[in-house]
View (cartoon, rainbow, N blue to C red):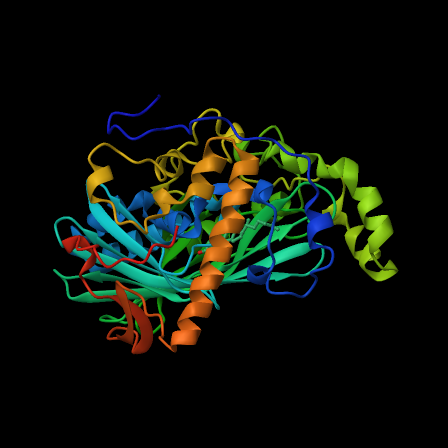
Length: 462
Ligand code: CLR
């Protein structure tokens, strides 16, 4: 099986099954509901648990190492900002639903520079906690995510509630931020696509310096698709650097005064650009980069689906310009990407060549469900890699995966009932809910025991 020099697999055992199920037919009765309570058919899943998906924040962990190596706090903040943005890049075109982790499920990952442990610490509401640390102990990165999914008819809105914190021991510095929201469009008709938007403020709690980023919405003609823009500010909110990029591609920064000069010089040209005279496509946004074929097939099914089941009102909505058939937003990628004297903080890794047949996984994602040699003996029995439903989907056995998924969910419900009978509360094994000393808010902090690998008392959750 193909793998890179570091020996991790770069592809899944079999290509995915491109189904032609209609998401709308499943969701049409669920408008306004919390999506965590809706059981979705396994064909909409990708073969990863949300704990593994969360671990994808770590793909560019080297940025944290580089940050700790900088003696200037502003440069450190630039790299932390790069890391915060890079953590979201793997979401591009990833429209499969990760499996909901079972209560007490864990996921660990050990790599050259870091190790991370995740645990599902709550089921209702679903909360996943993680704690990552550098091998050289120079940084830690921890937090918890409570993804709130809301279905609005033509779109699904996802709010990843929870704060994440980076700590640099050498500098005794803590940074924290909250992830932006995300929206999956075209549930009823057209091709699914996703955007992430909102504000992200990355604060250095020791110096008061911060990066204030805006993730833009695509906008009417998609000119701002995937774009981010913002400023690095000192504690009196003075602008030091202008930050710009796309969460799918890169993050750059430039001194604020240079940006201001550039703006003045280019104001005329810019206006022309904005008016759409010089428009070009970036390869990333081009429709030739097809998302899951599954979803294209929705096109053919859409008319009947929505005729039979929507009101006039929602029908008007679904005919709005951003819902046109075959619609994948394209953006003008050229403006403000080449401001002179900019410095590139982060650029995205290319996706593997056949990723459209593998759930649009990045190379990093491809490796996550692999059980490497040597791992077998040490792996915690609650690890996501041991989940039979995910394993079956990964091997292309959809029916088997569906059966196992139902079995595991029933088993989880039974365990929950039993606990209620015994009046015994469940509590997470590796995390505790405590005050985060940096943000002064309650947070899931790891108890530091996982890596001692004493797993004898673990519940049998699979
Ligand atoms: C986005 C980045 C956040 C954490 C986070 C939480 C929930 C994830 C979301 C991310 C990406 C999109 C996601 C979502 C859960 C379900 C949703 C994977 C990783 C998928 C695309 C929903 C597919 C099913 C619908 C089409 C019905 O920091």
